[in-house]
Length: 310
Ligand code: C5P
Image (cartoon, rainbow, N blue to C red; front, side):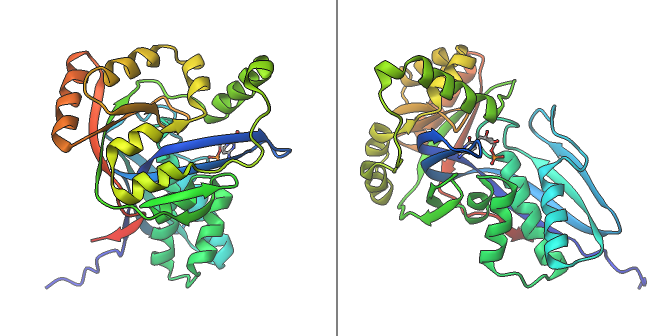
């Protein structure tokens, strides 16, 4: 027998997401855009282990290119831990080990998932007794997509994307993701969309003032019908992402002519997501895309949001 006491630590896993529908309204005075989106959490995860410490420190590892991920106080996971400590009146610190599988700056909410996981892990470690609603409020302060990473599943987001309502979803949707080597900046994509709308104002007409998720999307999710969902996929940011990354048009075309029901840019991109009819179709499409030299992954959704794991 030894007297050694194992250091308590908490591990939380949080999913990346695909926006299966994203309608973007006008730019508000605070720089954000009012939007309506349908999120689906998918089986690509970020893991965060929180260990007690006097200071706030972080180490980042992963299966994805980690260039551009700060391993200091700028990291969103560490900012989440600090925010929770100050709101809960916790005086100690924490060490966070973040293991990333979601592409960095890929449009799949990887950084948001890290923040959600860090919030939940520190909440459990420090036993803060904050309510779910209070955690949600802190999540929204960290970023528009952080509340969804906490909730997971399928949800409709309005406002900045942070006002969530769960959506009924049945069954499983299979996706093939094509991951880019280089990320894109989300603010740059929104800026490009504003510029595009300004340039083509006459053709496009007025920007939607009250974005809403198309009823066909909600119907397809409820029915678990991939073909119906494929016909209703929409991403208003895609036109802007494609201007910044014209090479993605070819990727979309390749996927759509190689067995996908439909493809779209995920969020602000540059990850491209292809919806497939069955897991077998997805496995085949992944092989086709890999043979063409792309980094491709097969994932499925919906999956649960951030949760403590053994
Ligand atoms: O909230 P988050 O940090 O994820 O947002 C990143 C950037 O994306 C914002 O600074 C803003 O430029 C843009 N954005 C937006 N409208 C939204 C969400 C994000 O313009 N609803």
